[in-house]
Length: 287
Image (cartoon, rainbow, N blue to C red; front, side):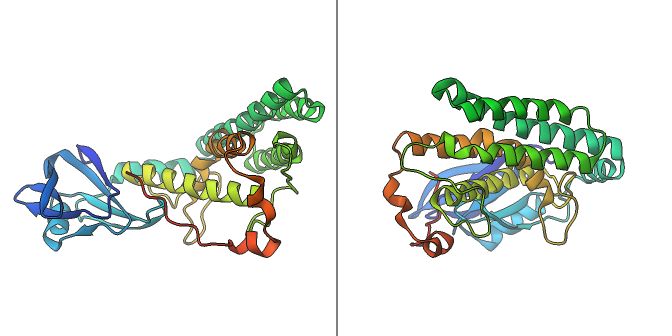
């Protein structure tokens, strides 16, 4: 049975977390900010340099509460697991889905269809709002590929549909940008232009958010149904983030660019500067 209670997410680096009998107490400058009974906590996620006493950590583990450690930007660093922690039935369900091709196919089909639907909606909006001819053709083609997802009965065929859809989508992505911006096509590892850099950074943040949500609910993020198994890779995170790429990250980047939220002067860097970053990106703090 999963641990009952509410997740506790701590993002303030000025807090000290200590134990007071059967309570977890958050202290700042010798003043108690918040206290929470251990019995009401299901999991704890610490973001950034939050300080925890040994007694508090021991109390959490004794109560069967796992603690996940994240960077300030949300990147998962690791988990301190209690001997009582872990939902073994959820793990067995994940393994069972992996071992049954029909179940795996159903999940992958829904993930890819959702991703293509998000891409289609963005391109269609550009067609309706700006009368872009290329976007009209791309939106129709993406609609056909979305429908094709539900007809495919093979994982490799579905991955092929995903690849064709991405090529169609990013093939007209420059039509979605405000004047003064350019897009040479999707370039990763490293991105070589400002738009690709923003997309990649957004996808990284989205992966951190998805990883945190999965950990807080007890999933094993190494077992992915679309991206498969690979040593050291959080495949389930990559699976789950697919539907959010266009619907959340791309939409946000386009909104910032097209509403003058980001100046075109940001794009004056060289290929090397975009790849390495002209300045280090600070961790994003959440209040």
